[in-house]
Length: 89
Image (cartoon, rainbow, N blue to C red; front, side, top):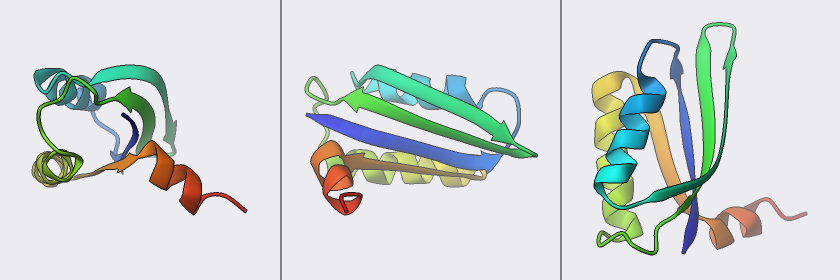
């Protein structure tokens, strides 16, 4: 299953590395990634493949949320089909 991961927070060294490392620990493959810094805010959006992940999307959501809180970031994961349905006009 594909999912969308978003990361937002104050820019600092190592954000991409820490998020990607956490995803790799759970066998989540990054298919596409886009990141930018808007003034002092870091933003990243990733399309990921969760098919090899043993954790549920809900469990990953909790893990990413906890990791984000510890780093002053907002990290969210959402199933691709739900993301697309929410953004369809």
